[in-house]
Length: 235
Image (cartoon, rainbow, N blue to C red):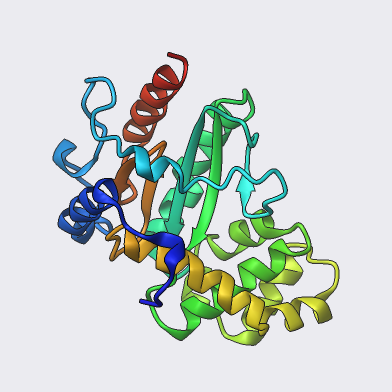
């Protein structure tokens, strides 16, 4: 993992890293989740919350890799890989429902972090998503890359350009330059570093106002965490 002073791990982050390290092996097997693998599943106020991790929310109104109000009371940070099948399941089934239920009313903000862990094609897809975001088409690229059957076609350079075209990226020449730029590599590396600092070793992994959640858990797990975080934010 690259060394950086940007993500020094305090005691609370160490605790969360230990939690995610224990449960991350289940992150690609969400079919029968156990409450024990999800932080914050308890009804006890602030249960499973690591206040240090709440600071990982960027809340940048101009962030093209985010959706929802910058001042929303709840921020869900998603660490994911475009080659991850369960990330795709979450993207197609759960995330749209969360956006419909919480983002439009102003409760929730979702912030994406690129966490490519499956090799060169994962890295390229992550850089391509970032490059699409530079032209305001990240979420359209995200949808195209997570469509049924998309990952089976791979993420070679021609393929990610085709996905950018599908996503409506207006300047494909600029997309190509951004895709292979040092800035793209640095942005992806920074997201990876943050995820590894948390102890995440598999995808998808999440933070909901400082509550770690590992795996593409059922909708009910996310609604419980979001509702609890909203109540806590209102106190």
